[in-house]
Length: 625
Image 1 (cartoon, rainbow, N blue to C red):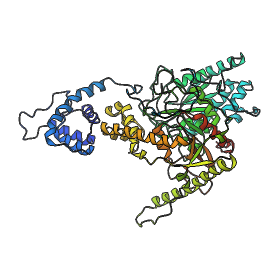
Image 2: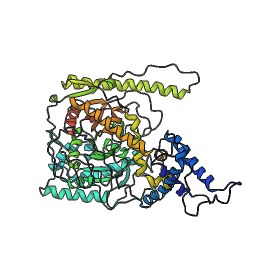
Image 3: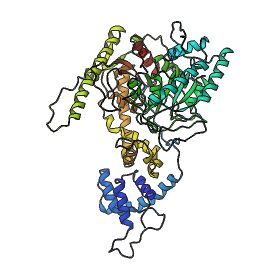
Image 4: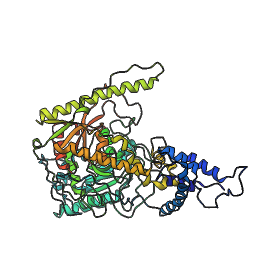
């Protein structure tokens, strides 16, 4: 009898703890091993019904080749016996049907022994500071048409609500109306939480009128990336096959923003299972080029809605660029906090050792205000540290040691190379566009250094990233992601996901099942060494500035360091048009700059970024929709 597909995949997953074959080949082997050949003897019986196919020595040979090890033939009989015995254990684990919310019994800690964290005294667990020190603000007025304030910052909107010049209900109505009007063009809404929003706004107005003001987020409408659970509403993770998924509890971040008095408008789009900007309904668009360009991802809807003036702020997540990339693409300010700063309870897990939750706003100070409300332990996410967030917008940044990533800023555009006669025209065009885009981006990067040095009077220290192969251990993400969505692969439901290219999750999950457990552990050991080298880099600086699209993105997501991404100019008419809807660039689109801080050093990081933003006006420009 031939084995069924589910049994076959059970065997594949078993090999994931050592090594294995490409599934199709191994499946073929199990078929061959259970279908007697014409010359087979009576003793070569097929397995009984419902038994998994047996692992053979031939399979070990091929698996050893994949793993890059040599196993002598004399050891294989013992191995076959042990490997087949383990299949029952693996099946027992599979039958537990572990939900995505169950984390491994191992925990990543970015703070290695000997690293000193420069943070203020911690807040009591579960009671983060929601009344941060605020900068001075000029008088704020309300226009006749309320939509004229749709691009106001959190700080400005908070002042209007606090002084009762505008009600939370009026703001909520305005943003809901704007969302509904622009969503057919931008595709950033998955589910509106309209009833919840109106009830929250009404409650905020009543409390504020009674003198019970909760702080700068009280009454302000916001949007949640749709991997945060909200009771009573679906949480789809942006993925086909999960369109009607619901959870019975709000995520911790949602609860904390409720406690701060903020008003949840809706669940915003993310690329399927937190990859890219393509979700089960559509591709979320860049408000600056909605007809021809996606918003990047995976915090696609959170970034697009904020850039389009459809909420006061939004919440996104990052594992490897999911706040950085869309913030850069659509020209908003995104904060990726230190790993372990914000609880992930109630959020979809992609990589337990890399996932981070952070605010996406229109200004740096807005990010600080939101972080003040959501950071700190919740008693449920064990990875969260109890460090304070001493935000001071008036900090004298000249007292800080600030580095700049010299090699990346000095890097010149790649010179033209001769095209071979057989090279396709499209490839030649892409190569030329790449050189031109780098030339344009370098001009913005150079200008940012000039602002920091000449306008803000800062003495920048040249720094270099550790010479460590961070790229070689980035497969840690996909290994954990494959485990997080183990049943999706084994059940075959991965075929429901919208993206089915080689770079999409279904293929990545399958490939990642063949990462040997020994190599996964070795990669984590190497990660420790990389973290130690990053800590050495930060011994003499408080933070550094870098081009957004540089090697720092991979390093800092693996080491857990925080970063803030802010708009840094707009491309002119000489910018080449994007070749595909997923490409960045193009005339009139934003560029960005990134500041990277020390572990749990968000207060200093944001103070410098705010000073830079105040010295420029890029964040005050908005798309014409």
